[in-house]
Length: 75
Image (cartoon, rainbow, N blue to C red; front, side):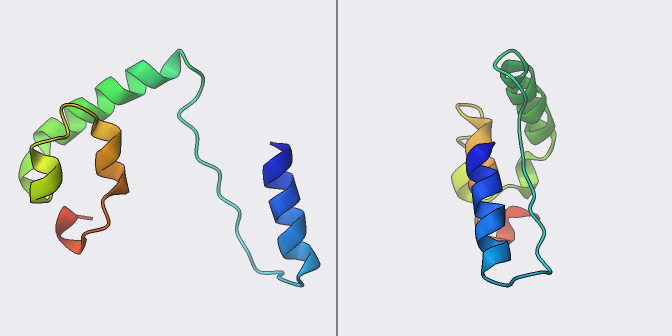
């Protein structure tokens, strides 16, 4: 959390005033497996919308699908 506050302060010191700081979290270590399972279940229903690279690989690690930068990924 301190690193995030440091970065926010840095942007303020640069004179940037209209910035949004968004923090994303999957929760604690106990929440992560449930999140991964829920994501996998969701992606299974959306498989036809995924890019070719991720359509075949989401079962092994559904979190990697969130990193897809291809416009054809259905976003």
